[in-house]
Length: 165
Image 1 (cartoon, helix red, strand yellow):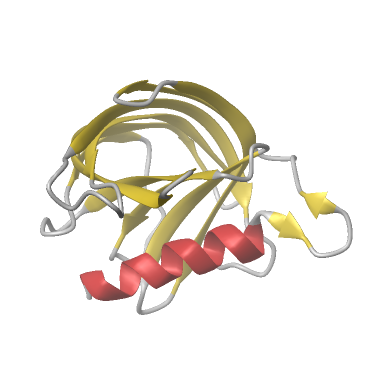
Image 2 (tube, helix red, strand yellow):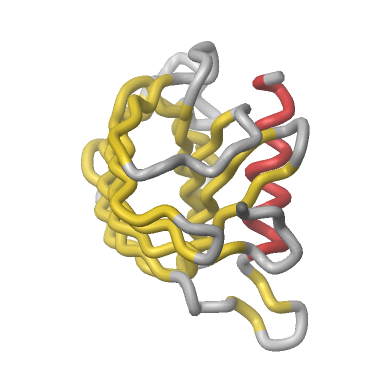
């Protein structure tokens, strides 16, 4: 089931965070701080949704189009208020990723540890914080392992057309 999460996260980010006529939709929002081998501050739109049989996602689409942050869980339910562990793709639970375009190509940083704190959970709004540490490998340097720490505060709205109850 985990192999379904990657395409789901990408599709939800591309379709839910863009309005096809006017560009990025900014009614949900987030702020993120990236540190480690790359440092950056990002902000933009935040959406969440459930795709039956594929799971729950939060998609954070920065105004800077060369980045993306996503959180996924194979369960078909919106998380309730509380703390959740964030692991890697091998774990049965939440996982996160940070995707960054570079001069040499795209680097996908996959979480190996972290925490999700949901402070508000309703079909219309999901708020909280996400912190995770992730590893990635540059496309032209397969023997190099990079690490980033990602700290996010978000206020996400239900993605248009998504199931969010």
